[in-house]
Image 1 (cartoon, helix red, strand yellow):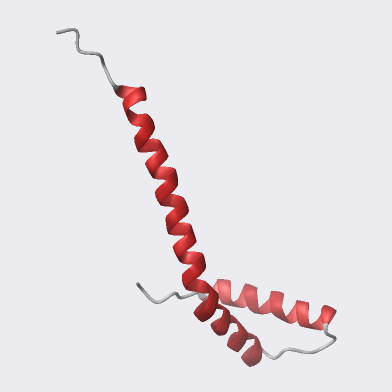
Image 2: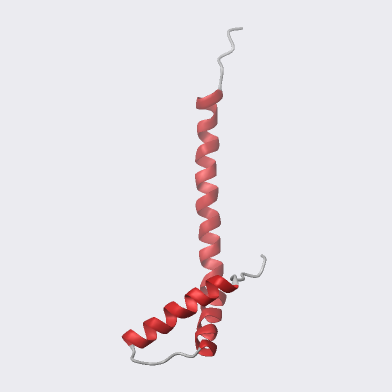
Length: 79
């Protein structure tokens, strides 16, 4: 599997969310460095499971569409 990477824009957004969470819930200032460490840990530990679940969900959705294909486009052969 390809290594999971975040765009810089996503990382900055997540960093901001983490810093807000720590400030409001724990009354603690979280530096950019510490926030990035938490993000990296979450990607490493949760990323593969979330990715695999997304792949399974897409596979099930597409399989359902393929299963419906016969009903949508099948033409009865009169011979």
